[in-house]
Length: 278
Image 1 (cartoon, rainbow, N blue to C red):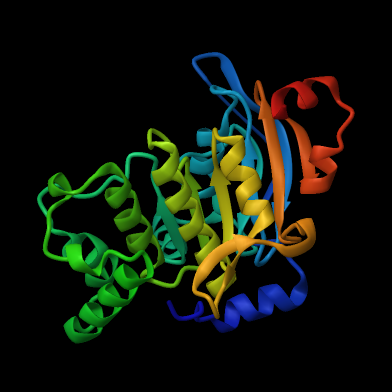
Image 2 (tube, one colour):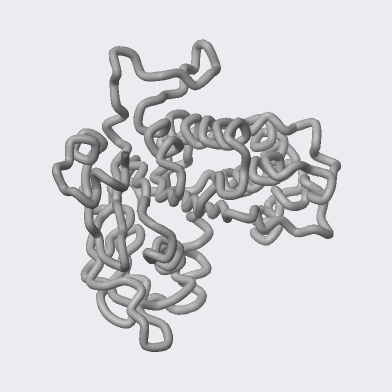
């Protein structure tokens, strides 16, 4: 997969040192129940931020907020340096054109074959059909599924559908990818395959990522492994190394209880965190 094509606006944002995603004192609730409370954090350019925490802690709501699908009750969310609350519907649509989204249930169109599912965004943008075909093939090669291009989602396994979802997310070479539990519901072997693709995308394209996972093993695999372009495989970072661009955010009952690096998390003395990660 080719490296992300960086727009002049993105180059300016990166040069300024501004975060790609920024939550500033964000709160939101539903039916009188507060789901997120005074949440503040940033995701820097090229960083992979892993969201951990018990079920019901607000992780998926946070992801929807980051994509402008819902609005917070208070606070401000900035993506690519712009406040989402200040954007019009058209501006939000344009913003999402630079965001890839991988859903837990893949969210493929059952009535479209793999080629049309992966090509969907490019067709909406009226890209030349010849270029669409080339980019679909490129994306499917990246996830090692070129051979299923003519099949329908119902003909694929759960792991294959998730890989097609990743191909669809990366085809537009986005500046930000949101992974909502990409290994949810998958067996351990298939989950490992999906995480290796996430690592490959991170290391080949240097794309900024926000990723939810319920599997600590997946989270620490991201932090301790890399893609070797010479061997064309994912491997453990030598000498017990840790990827410096991979950081953690832990939510519990709508509050941030940890925001930091892998080493800071594994060496925490907080009793709740120690019990959670062990």
